[in-house]
Image (cartoon, rainbow, N blue to C red; front, side):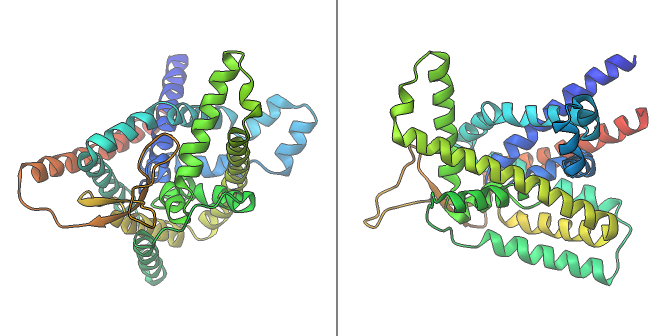
Length: 338
């Protein structure tokens, strides 16, 4: 019975990783929200902050089993396996759905965030002046970010490293979309489309015993950019986790109310009824990435009219709320079994 339960837990951990990876890639959606509503956010932060000097010493001394146990290796490895698979599978499906069914996809995300706000608030018992102040600060920051104008693309490796640190905010800060932050920094296409495609193509070339890409300066540049971005993301992930673990232990109510504010503020980013504004050059022509896809620059929001499409979108919002309630039900069931 225990082995079956362990296998089930492993399977659902991979699924959660898939969900986090997909959410992290979609502008406006935060992978941290998935962790929050699925009930493993604090374990995720706690596990990441275990990557410290003690873990490093265990690793260089060859004590791999001790290292794996110390950093909660099973949890982290299964979760990140799901995220990696997601970047090459589920996120591709999401890209397709957003292009062809944009309103309904955003409606589901909007409903999920409404559900996550309910999930966090229903058990929150620490309301006080500081908590309310943190809530309003979080809302203000979230709304302000959603209306900022994006910068221009910058492939300077130092800036790319900084982008890596900032982009993981979506994994550690529920309501902060790392991919939307990359749009604002001007590097979403460079770091989450072009460089990932370069890696994808390079892997297939290697499997085909074709190493000609090594003489392609543009491919090498993209791989360098991706490597620096990945290193920055890892540094940001570990450093953010240490900071959050510290504040969650000492200022739990204030931190949770601030995170709740971020999530409420992010509703403006994922508002379903919006027109996508694509990037244009100085004479008004659409700018595309290396795959020919139009580059998103920002969104123009509007209030919907009463028609069939709007009612279907509202139904998808309800569906998104039900997804979160289902995740909550599963999380409670799992905790009771344990």
